[in-house]
Amino acid sequence: MWDREQPLRPNMDFAEIFAPGSNSFRQEDWEILSQFWHPLAFSHEIRGDPVSEKLLDMNLVIYRTSHGITVARDLSLYKGTRISSGKMDNDYLICPFHGLRYAYQGYCMDRPAFSLITFESKEHCGIVWTRLKRNREYPLPNWAFLDSDQYIPVFIPSEIWKASASRHVENFNDVAHFPFVHASTFGGEEGDPFPIYQVRNEPFGLSFELPYTEVGNRFPDGRPDLKDRQVVYRYQLTFPFSTCLEVDVQGSDFLHVILDTVCPRSARESKIFQILTDNSGELNAELWLDDAVAINSEDRPLVEAQTPEDVPLDLREEVHIPADRFSLEYRRAMSNKFGLGAPISS
Ligand SMILES: [Fe+2]
Image 1 (cartoon, rainbow, N blue to C red):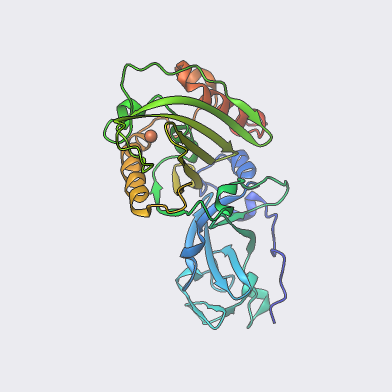
Image 2: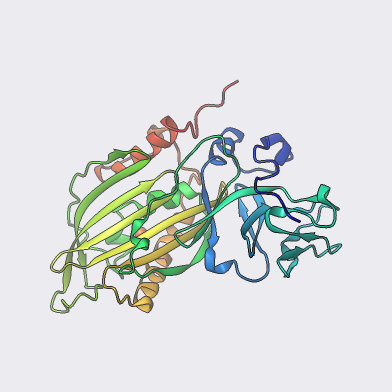
């Protein structure tokens, strides 16, 4: 019988996990990031056989039994093989090497001493989240839109970008690039000035809003007569890497919502999860899927080409303009609130 409700070793030390040099993060940053909840996969992707993912340079296996989701280190304690290449059989994950059976929460039915190292996990907003440590109680993003039948979700196929999670977050929350990078999709006129906006500190995040004029009309809200659209963008960041962007379309009561969160697979590689929705109650999934794919394909090569790859937390290292207020506040918060990128203590 499986009887494990708690992770076997939820507070492993960094030194227990990585051989020297096998981790791409600064050790101090890894310790801090390991305490946040991070997205690993869409819930609907964890159905049949186990799925392999990576978080903070650690290989993980995710599998579903009738008792729920299990997230474990992708490592058999017997002979050290990766078990994500195994199969599910009657509620058990079968190790591909010697056929050991693993139940919910990694319990090894055949040799309990070989039970998997498991981590806490939750399913929230259609996403599987996990945290490697539980020293602190950091919240998940509160995306209440998805509780309403009116807001039908479209899950955009996730992509792995060769960029740090912070670089993606800064780009997603940046407005200054719209006229240049997104000229083919929704970007406005190059000469339009950006209003000075204020970034507000929230209990566990940052928020700001600003008006914008999109060239073209991508909104199915019964106003095909309008060639450009006045919108108000409302951004709500939840630390460290999750953003809700509401696009409040003027001229109708249409509200378009983009939910974006990032799994830091390594210091230079991120998995992007996006859920799109609107308040129409009869969402056009194909429309928003095509929109997201087009916009992301415009952003991705530029974000992947940014140097340095890590977001510099020393604010003097990059030149900023007024439209960069979010980046400035984000970097300040990541450093001051959590200690990310802080000088290494001797
Ligand atoms: Fe963009």
